[in-house]
Image (tube, rainbow, N blue to C red; front, side):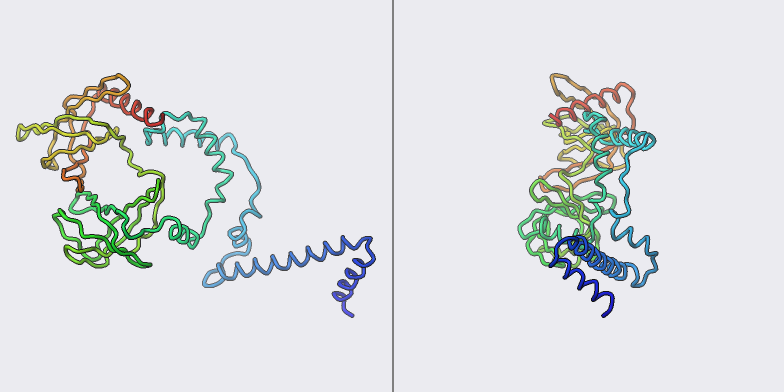
Length: 337
């Protein structure tokens, strides 16, 4: 009788007799569990890192089971200094973040540091998640986002057919350029309170009928559309073209430190310096801006029957810069209430 049989016989006899049997049985279970774990680990290693690749066993184990090799740690003084610098940089870029205390960001960053392992997911998990939770369905409104001849076009359309490979949308009206096969573009759509954006390519075009798009890749998901500009409510103003000595009434849609987005029924030209004047009231405070130098950076095509433009500020003196900074902070704080 070999040693393995003797060992199993001892366990069986020990269980009948009682006494020290529980220790033998637990040892047996531990050995079986270890063998199963090693077999699984080797199988995962072979599937992911041996076929066509040469990866060290230690590295493979760390990639397969990172939690087993990761020791609990804490943020040291130098890491906290780096974290503080990152928070300052972030708040400079995101105006709305100005109203959030640094301590809140520090607590979240530390929480994220200890839970970053939860963000490690496979591509299959991502595809299944998007397919089951945020699918593109017939009847959805899509926004096609593409650059054409230096102009950013935002074009609303509707999904009329969808399968595992393609999305067919209505051919939009009022567009003065042709959609071509192979043209890359982004599509944007909402599911509930979530906003999704993905890169796709035109597979075919049925003129004046529909456009067939490939299923988008690298979909991004967020709780809001991440435009850095802040919206203004019922803001009116005028824009002056010194070349033609003409003025137009405009609606100021949104604003940022870099520029504004506005709407008007007339065409604006690139490579022309315009002078923008407007006033805005918030929290019983009036902000008046006169002759802000600006130039067209983007043109938007919309379905609202009007022309929209993005303009960037060419120069802001200290007085206007301080006034604009105060206005933006007031708007950001109001949005946080």
